[in-house]
Amino acid sequence: MKTDSFEYRRTCILCGIYALFYTFCLYKNYSGVTFPFFVAGTLCFSVYFMKKQGLTLKKFSYFLISCSLLLGVNICLTSSWVLSFFDRCFIFLLIFMLLLHNLYDDRTWDVTRYTAAISAIVATAVGYVFRPFTDLADLYKSKRQVPQAEAAIPGAVPPNAAGQVPGAVPPGAAENVPQGAPQPNDNVYVASPDGNMVRESYPAPHKKGTFSYVLLGLVISIPILAIVLPLLITSDAVFSSAMKHAFTFDWNADVIGVIVMIIVMFMCAYAVWRRLEERISALDVPVPDKRIHNPVVAITVSCVMLFFYLIYCVIQIVYLFMGYGTLPEGYTYAEYAHEGFYQLVFICLINIALVLICRKFSRDSGALKVALTLISGCTFVMIFSAVYRMLLYISVYRFTFLRLYVLWALLVITLTMIGTVIHIFCPGMPFVKYCVTVLISTWIIFAYMNPDYRIAQYNLTHTNWAGYKADAENIDDLPSDNIYVRLDLSADAASAVVRYSQSDLFTKECLTAYTENYMEDRDIWAGEEEKERLSIRHLNYSAWNVYRLLERY
Image (cartoon, rainbow, N blue to C red):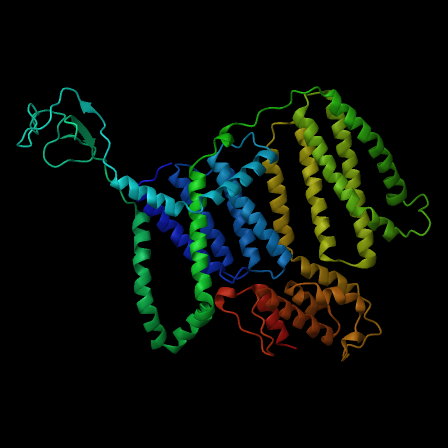
């Protein structure tokens, strides 16, 4: 796909501004208050790209945009690396889904096609990272080439010694010969080296829109600010202090890193832009209906699995739910509950895949629908068994982030299984959109409920503080069963510790540990007694809150 000089300049300016914006927001700052602005800027960049392609946002796009912004806001509210990691993964997924959903007709797409599409875009974009330079070289070569003739007038003769072509029509003598200076889209006849009269077309120049003038203004303002800002900073101490806290920057250590990040992000943005412009023809082909195979194979597999599932579900009801029967010797109910939990979760995922595969490749059959529905019913029993087992285990061994996380995962599996049952009888339902909605919506609720706070709240309120002195001076004199709260949670748990702890020493130890852990994760911990103040750009609510609480102790 060839690019003219105007399109090349516009794309370079846009990608350059995005690279500068990305560097300002995220350079050594992946959980600060600038992160939601980075997400918003990336969404604007994506929407502008789709507008240049002549596309109008589809309805589902607004859900994807809203969820991306909520996840971006949550990153600057939490200091939990687990929450931040999944937030970033989901933002990446949502932005690529936004682009693919609007660029292609995805009404027939399944999970496999979406996975293949995102993987193909990311993998092939690597080959486009040097396109800014190759496109520039192509433009330079095209300008040095002799314009190609659109058509030759038969019978033309070479010019004479005076440079005139005998029999040539003088300018203005015919309607198809423009008068005066060539105008846009006019056809002008000139003599070619071989003596024929050729017609050259003068294309109309590109019209610059408002956005182009805005970009030009931003580019012009950069050198002006480079002169004005130092003068402003040196003229007022308050303004200088504000800029210092807003833009902490070590020229000796950071200038190379900033330049490298700007260049890399410019090349990446340009590569993705060009990759998306050049459509992947395979993605324009709808996913074919593969329900053409004999359903007997799927029915047989389903019946075999169903036989063992029914026996398993009966045992769960009798032994676990109703409390009848006798456990094997040496087992407690907590150990029995914990032992099979993760196996059950994996089996539930297998059952979802089994139902979807059987429904995708087998012809419609009443017997198959009944068998798959029964398997789905057994899966619900297994999910309930897994939840019950985990709650029993938590009642004895308290909460950890992983245990709370898997409860969220079981909720997602349950809702996905409900959608799977609907898909059995209504194969035309948008199953991928349903699953994405369930996954992202429940994760946003999970993230905003502040998991570390809830874990600390539950564990501390279920601690037996009797026998422990509230004014203890040695951390070893405090309850050992709360080591997880002190050492493994993030600063998100600080407010819960202050509210529910019955020991000032334990509270101070927790707040100090949370502060040190956050600073180590930020890679700016220097070991001094006084904490290093963060700039406005690095402001994170969770870190600010733990600093504020620590000042009381």
